[in-house]
Amino acid sequence: MKGFLASMYVGLQIESNWTKKWVWLLYLAAYPIGSFLAVIILYGVFGQKTGLLPYALYGTIFYYSLSMVFFDMAFSVHDDREHYQTLKYIFLSSTSYRTYLCGRAATRYLIALAGIAINLCWLVPVLHLPFHPNWAYLIAGAVLGYLVAAGLGLAMASVFLLTIKLDVDVVDALFGGMFVLSGALFPPTAFPAVFARIAELVPMSPFIELMRRAVSGQILTSFLSDLSTFQLLNRVALSAAVLFALGSVLVAFGSRKAQQKGYIDVTTAF
Amino acid sequence: MHTAIQVENLTRVFNQRGKAPFHALRGVSFDVSYGEIFGLLGPNGAGKTTTIKIMSTLLLPTSGSVAVAGFDVEKDYARVRPLISLISGGETSGYGILTVEEQLWMFSQFYGMETPVARSRIEEYLKVVGMWDSRRQQMNRLSTGMRQKVNLVRGLVTDPKVLFLDEPTLGVDVEASVIIRSIVRDWVQGKPERSVILTTHYMAEADELCSRVAIINHGLILANAAPSQLKQDLDSRAHYEITVDRLDGEQLGLITAFMGEGNDLVLGADKVTNSPMLVAHLMHESDIARLIAALAGQGATLEYMRKLEPTLEDAFLKMVGRRFEDEEAVSPVS
Image (cartoon, rainbow over the protein chains, first blue to last red):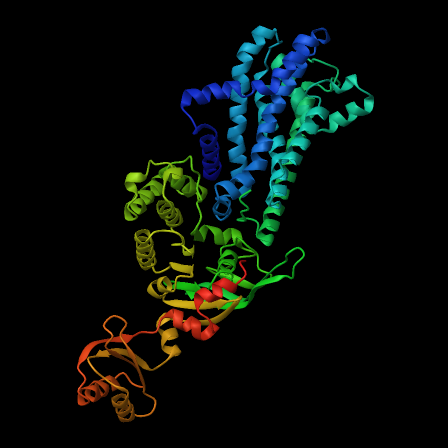
């Protein structure tokens, strides 16, 4: 637990210690805007008649929160190995590398959620978004969503442990692809049935839909509408358990292989 | 349990794409006792860092075994790690945005230390290295020497049983080097169940600190003994440099005959004063008295005399056949 909290602290310092507190708070509020501005233009201005703005906006901002965890975990490996040159010292400590990665990403997730909360304060009244939060589902969903993203992030970290050169494009392509397929931006049911089936299999889809319902208090489209909110929660819990276990196994495997190849402390000055 | 580390027949091969495999270690064996500062001495690419990485669980061996505090580094690495610390020189590790204090506290937490204990040790060691006043400075504002001192404190705060020092004074100034060496010496003497494994290519550093050194080259241990023993093994004769006011070749011949077989005398000139300078290699240390008497008998007055001590560098030269820096120039970097 001490290791987890210390990792959270490092994550917070890396995120916030580069400027004055008030500038950082401003940044915290402004940063998520980039993720949903296009959605507002797309559905709030041009596609107003579709009525999909709440669906797409909630979907995008919660997908954004997951992406923070995913990217943070994936890039921490290179960050710590090449830039800070601390990876080997973390590896040799009593804290497991998985715990460290989870701690750092947890901070990033909380920061992302804080940014979302700040933005919802003006988005809801200005855009007349449905807002009837179910706090129990919202909190449970947030915790489980973190585990879903952490599972995927750990899997990606295991790949980066075995990769000397940083390949940002792979991560971008993977997460960009899942953004489209998860139905975060538009309801997959508007497309051929096969697309909707694929969307249901994307690990983030149930989480995003759960969070939409938990915030808006409504079922906004027919996507996953055959599942009750409780069933959705169970599906997210199942995804979280499977993905987190899988990510843990993979990062342990990646660590062992990196130890074998001598990649724990390799630096390339990329 | 007196053995801190036991290394048996350790090998490590690095496969390189499109090249022949590189054999970094070719059957290395040695052990280290508690209370000892053990040095691994060799040029770049000799296998020192590879050995230390395997001992500290950063790298897996190709074959052979290493036990640290009785635990196998390959199978029981989770039990080894809380007992060890690694400090590498010549790097700028650390989170630049954290202060010195924050950085050290954070690592103490990774070892599960209670914060009051951690804070008290951080204070103690920062004062020892003379950095208490810099505790609130960000890491990225520190000089290389200061960073290395923080690195040393990070390694000591967790009170490890075995401290691995990989070129700890590389790239730091003379003053910082002296402080680091002094702290390491005091630290290992602080408790009986502590030991230090030091890799260095500074011969004088190994000579000063280590109770035992292994000379390693091309992945093989060439010698493993106390520095004094290595130097003694090099040449059992006593060596002196004597400057006199006058001495010619004829007189030298007479003195050489007087000293007898096995005692070699070489006549040259002092580079500064240009006075005759005799380099004497004597079978027994006590022969120096006879030599001084013989010089006096030839009317030569002693101006200056010093005993020449062999160095670890000389031991390396004898074992490898080349001087240390020449060997570095031809060695591959692992």
